[in-house]
Amino acid sequence: MQHELTLYNEVKQIALLPGFIEEVSNELGLDEMLVFNLNLVLEEAVTNVIMYAYPKGERHSMTLKAWTEGEDVLAFELKDQGKPFDPIKEAPEVDTTLSAEERGIGGLGIFLIKQMMDEVSYRYEDNSNILTMKKNYKA
Amino acid sequence: MNFSVKEGDGTLTGVLDGRLDTAAAQEFAKDIQVMMDNADKHLILDLEKLTFISSSGLRLLLALRKETMAKGGDITITNVLPEVKQVFTITGFYSLFQFQ
Image (cartoon, rainbow over all chains, first blue to last red; front, side, top):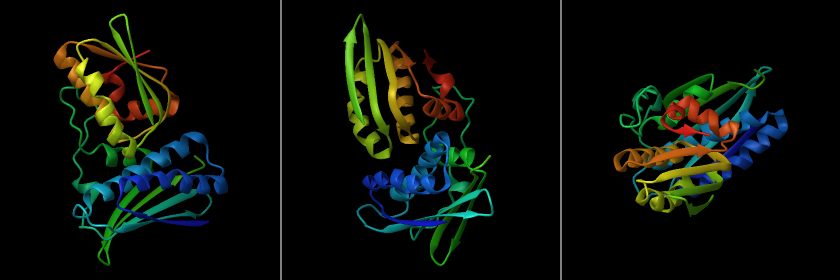
């Protein structure tokens, strides 16, 4: 299985994600909770690129790929040519035990990605940020 | 996402209907102002028809929570769907709100 989607760095493009995940889901028979979580994970990853990768007002594209590995791993890769940014290392830490007054608003997106996926990795290659996210979809 | 507000008995109920994704959150940031302005009251957020939320939406709800603490009001979240509830749980936001 392999699917690919090209998105521009505009917030409205997020509306393309549910259809992309539905294609993957129809092929693999994913349960509702996982479909919800994949929508969340991919939205957070794409939003990071839309908001922070490029100077404001510049239009650029990014590519999102989905494929399976072995019998039970679903993998996604998001690739953009924006400024180098490793969200795993550079995003602010999230402390879920803090009170409402103490809670900040940074880092929540990447925190959710790490919590909901089994494996998240980042590399910078060929002038591109490449974020790879994997999940056992049969677990 | 659609957002509507009902008023009665000193409470303000906000009903969220649809997907609160990053795009919808940009609109919701304006819509939620009426709740911010009434953050001294008892606020209810009815999430029965909220089918999706991401971190952009959570940030707005946190801002509203902080506003009620500053002004002496409170917020109760009702009818939350399991998929949405787990996002509150994972992020630790579940303990920041009252749920019913």
